[in-house]
Length: 237
Image (cartoon, rainbow, N blue to C red; front, side, top):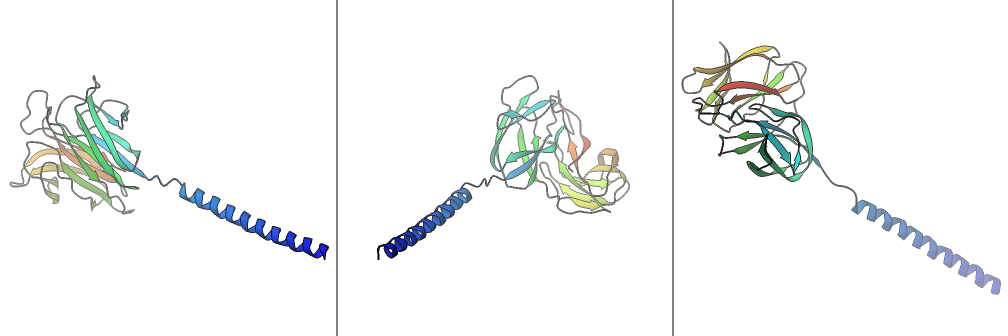
């Protein structure tokens, strides 16, 4: 009888131990799952679209992200990576750490953005554009147009001597990307109301599968320490 009692107790103890071990494993697994890093990443480019002849440094969350001060049309590419959510951008002159502009921006995960610094000295602001570059093509390039000239009317992006690709873009407006044939272009920045070319970008080579932004920059009537209206192009990717 004593032998049978001991065997039953042993089996019970083994069963309790097994359940306890299983519970511990499940609990540990749940804790690991709860602590899994859910951080998502966003991608950001920054462009100096201000007509000022000065140059700027750029800080993201108080960390300088440009290697050299950005002149008008200067950009930070390739895209930098930032933790998604709220981020702070800060701009200073090349020779000072005093804030000229500080902006909080909200970034979604796995999304690319371009932040355009805009405005004349003393009136700096910014435009955050979402860069939708999801179409993959082996026979088309993609281009968009942004009007960053504070005193310009509505503008068109047109092929010199050809068709209008993107029309009626007011100051601060960023168009969507449109598909074009890959080749070297001459682009006119036209006044929308008249169709007259206000400046021309020559030698713009667009490669299949790549994304580009053509920018109208500067002032139609530049003042002291301001650049005149001109067009520049950047390669997004």
